[in-house]
Image (cartoon, rainbow, N blue to C red; front, side):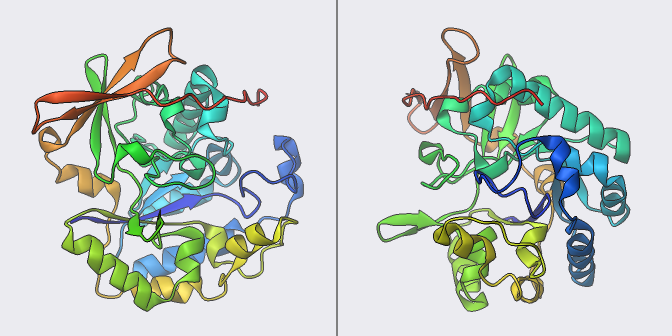
Length: 323
């Protein structure tokens, strides 16, 4: 079992699908910044437990705060991409997505001087209808992704993908996908391993859930945002349910992180991949019918010597405005 600590490095106002934040990128400079203080606290707690994490940076954050990227690298953390502007993948389409990840990769590599190999979709929004993202990731030189949420949720999900990592193959090349860790529960599946659910549930619940994952010999992938530990952040005007999920227990989240790290061997994706036998992973082949926007995955079943094509109904793609 591998236990990964990851941070989606974005500002407090990068909460998805709210009208309270301007969609004009230039307007973001008018919002007060909170990311420096939160990242310093996260760096310190990781240092205290000698944990090297994977940090998925927005390209926008890298451009605006290159010192955070450099500090992360200095402290031994892995630099990875979260895209440029926090757009949902399935809203971009193949061409704009490819441009977005290519730009973010170049920004972060220019700052850090090291190759950026990993990507995470904002909101885990790599859905069956956006399977064309994998050819784009391969073409832009990424070697792995952690962008799938294999249970129903907002911002998109991919329940058919399953819980285990897979090698996604296209054009003779491949990229690894590490889906988010979820637990089966009555009537639904959920994750207490990051974001709002992590803040909601007590540490005892988290540790019990982690033990369940460990017994099944599955990867545990933990994720957090800087805003998740910041009780002083401005509050956005959102529906009550979103307010609750976004701000519940932000004041105690840092101490909970300190407790879950105590005595546990968390690491980064780079280290996990270095110790992974890729040939042993199940494969999914990218198939295209009528151009890149008509793409689906074909899952191999090694034990049966057969494949299963996933041709889920295509979720309508709302093409985002050019940034």
